[in-house]
Amino acid sequence: MEEKDIGKVFCVESNDKKKVRDNWFPGLVVAPTAQSSVKTNITDDYLVRSFKDGKYYTVPKKEITEFTKEIGARVENPTLKTAVEKATLYLDKDELPPHWDRDLLFGLEKNCLTTDDEDKCDNDETPESKVDEGKDHFLALLFKFLDERGTPINQVPSLNGKDVNLFKLFKVF
Image 1 (cartoon, one colour):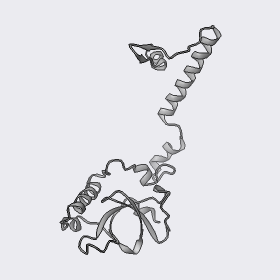
Image 2 (cartoon, one colour):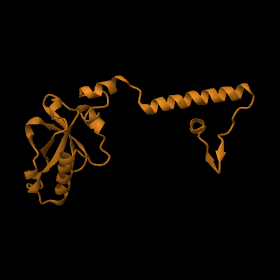
Image 3 (cartoon, one colour):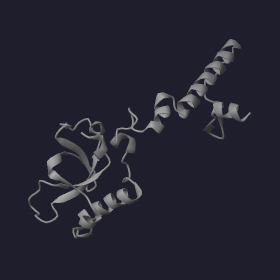
Image 4 (cartoon, one colour):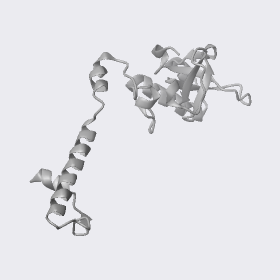
């Protein structure tokens, strides 16, 4: 699969012969790693996610055409029209439908495509992991200190029925 095509929208013909008219859907070409359960021959096929139903399809490269707004403007089927609107929104504003993970779809989780992201990729630790690491270290020191003094915490401290976040309290003071 050519990386330059990942993120492009194409018209994909569906195999459903019941409706001759509108027997296609707009689909987004995604990285072959986006869906592990769908087998893709990356030299001949694209892995496509449908704007119509959100499902993944393996589509031969020869059977797709580039999606344009003109093609979408001629649609009358309400279900297909909704899918076309989602595809157009993606093309215009780079906005994916809800619950579509951009990093997963475009294969950005494990590798970096742009040079600007190389600094981010080299550093595997995210700010959240540093905070979690600091919190874990603080709690380990706190419990060690309390155990040495013979006053271990057997229950999580609570105020007004809610658990107290000791790390947050420590950071405030």
